[in-house]
Image 1: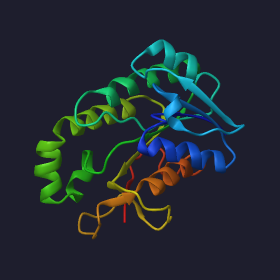
Image 2: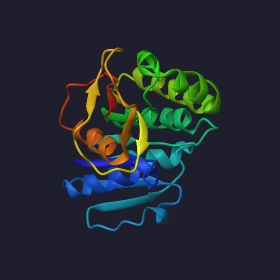
Image 3: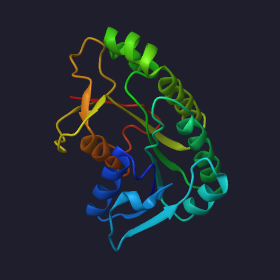
Image 4: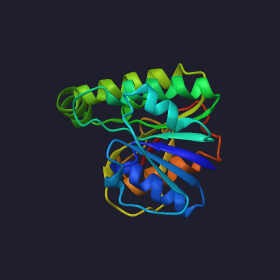
Length: 207
């Protein structure tokens, strides 16, 4: 497929780009500092741009089969929601349908899966703004009318891709580590390009 990755130089985005290329996809990597990607490949196109600039998003999105969003903004800011708004508007304009968006475990109904530490300390205090930005981003995706999947991973680790993780809508009583490697997150997101079981759903990811 011909795909575009937003947030391509982030910790998930880099894995998305590398794994997508290894799977034979044609990939456009969109980033503010594309040189930071450090990847070259005959099937890779690198686009410099700011996701907060609707015009640069518009120019980059045209002609792709699917859009993968792995935007990061640290603890502050609204880059995820504001940038995703622009992406959705452009996808509608150009008739693109498939959107796969990385969010976080703990948003929406998955909040019941969190421990007290994650509910009250991390998302309730330290990462409060980032959590609110993810919630706003998810609202935009769900209301987009597109063929979306929101992926909600646990806390990131630097482990290798294993393919051995729990995914979907687990029962609140099911034991979870609330952790997942970045490589496995990317692999699961890419799998959604051809597997539509989670179409218009928000599966969680955790070991």
